[in-house]
Image (cartoon, rainbow, N blue to C red; front, side, top):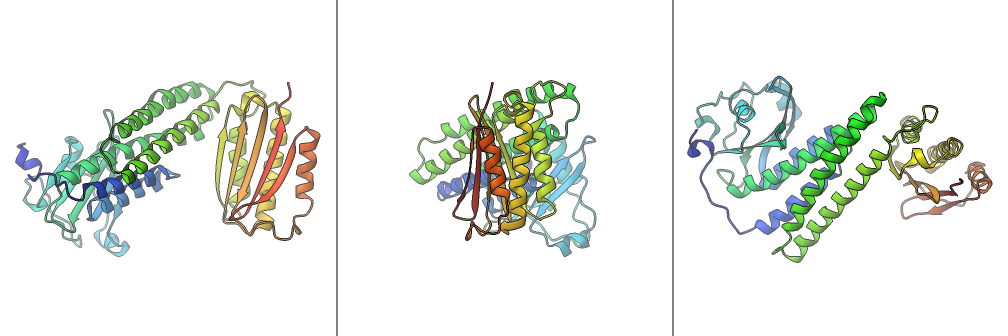
Length: 383
């Protein structure tokens, strides 16, 4: 295929590029905040449309048979989607990107020889930008953008920005898929392989992405440099979290439970019926440093603290974090409820937690935050 058939010829425009770089960094940060793969996929499409001013956008996920098995859209109303019917499977221009995964820009979709036209009730679309979402040689899917709002065609700048966004999106998708596989694992023989994938693939890719962003720091204005630095810091934090997930895969005696997995199950069981949105973070090798007895104490305290939040805080969100090192273990439960109030109505919950901590030589403190309350339970590790 000739170069003219693959893209509409134009030149990058320098004006406004700094502002769009700001938007690219913001989009990357938004993708990094996704909690699940469906959330991340939708954020990718939303960010791509906003970044280049596209009226319509979609992310097609490619299955094993090289067809589109999932299609996440932006810009089309639910009524429009229902009228169109089933999602595309990857024919025409969409199929071209599957068999030839390179960026593709077209000023007029209908003029391309591989165009199939649109099904009944499909909105009219003219300009097109398609970019593969890939990590190394693996293609997760393709980003499709149509109808640039302020121009007749997408530009080379648009393509460069979406290619950068797609690279970050691929890392986020890959990381999320591995994390979900990690949570679902119940067979011990898979642990070493998953830990190796997390360390050798995901961490190395995130590290390489961070180095690339740092290299792009030169020549940026102060505001863009700060945003880029913030994006690098968030990548570093993500690397730390993945390393902590690797700790959860460590070998342990058969009679010792996986405390991290038990904590996740406990939080889910207590918060779901109450409609709370939980977040859980574990820092440090929980399984190897805590004895079974102290592990049971930790789970009991976390459960009692969450029950207090459910019953008394009127909160919408709650975060549970456990930090462990060779000296101590610290459990923090923070909610965004109505705070401490007058201290009444808490029952004997806090007293029980204080008693548990004191028996182990530790402490338990309840304090107010800007948006709710925070409980910190801290005990030393014994030999």
